[in-house]
Image 1 (cartoon, rainbow, N blue to C red):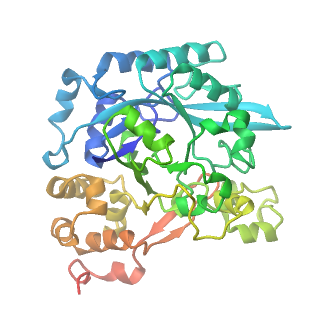
Image 2 (cartoon, rainbow, N blue to C red):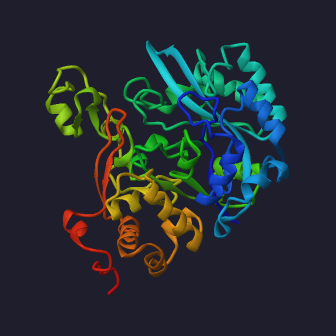
Image 3 (cartoon, helix red, strand yellow):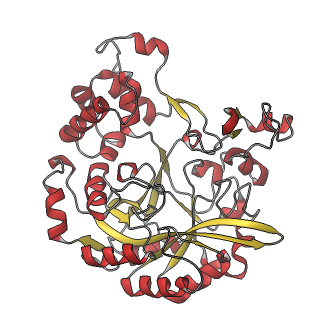
Length: 430
């Protein structure tokens, strides 16, 4: 069966996250978005793990469902056309800060486990190493290689995936605190890494440029800090609905169960270009090199983004595919398309949310609307500008002022001339 999974998220115990990041709201938003398997995030945090054990019950092997008493109040709020099964998988992101090969490294890794017993075992091991109670995403002085060793000892099906591998400050290949090779990060245990996460600022096309990444399958996840951000990136599986089936799709090069990924346009990510946020300076890598890496406003070093870092390490021309390549689809969240089409203040505005609910109530979940819904039906529900916006996104016909140094990119789907047209004046069908 084909389904979407979003396995890198956080809970309300993580810093700088929404208070609504609980299982009930994740259950609700997963259905609006069209996500069938959701990571729990943060399972080593003692209070969150206790909450998971209280609210979840076993479903398919290694997966869990929200207990009926917990699900029922949310089910009444879910739009009928969006209703679907939701499963949870035990996941956590761990931040490792340590010194290796003469440099301080800051690497984020995502860990999956198939049972509460495995979760408790990992929690117990990590509590002897550092503080796992102050933040849902624990910060440990633990080498990524040693973390991987602990994960492998936890359960035969436990696995570790390097998170958003290009983010400058916190990733395996990041420009500021990462390594030049994945094998430098995980040393003798690199053979136990079989997938890496693209992150919001890169897509598979960029990752395929590195031959060193050929052994790994690429995954995408939202890294959501609020439930409404679920599914902004996701992984498509076409396999059995169980933890072992997902594990095989990730780990076995012969298994084709991982069918593709849903990606941001990488320019929209927070670290695509180089730049200096304090000075509102966005730089293409060519300009950074021209200025010897210094901000033209203040003269301090800029943050080197993902585009430049990929170019630095690439050993293959753009367009060639890696051995484990899968299809990918660049999307822009539906509320952003609505806001752009209608000229409204932003995706969180009341008017955008009202139209968003109307579209979903008539057509189905957001990923269905973005990828599969007939444009005629979108036009009937939301008008020709929104339908045209979806068409342009599907065809990649968008302009984006690239993100840099922690600032998201600015999406432009329509021109000024388009916005001068009134509803009903934009012809989208020949």
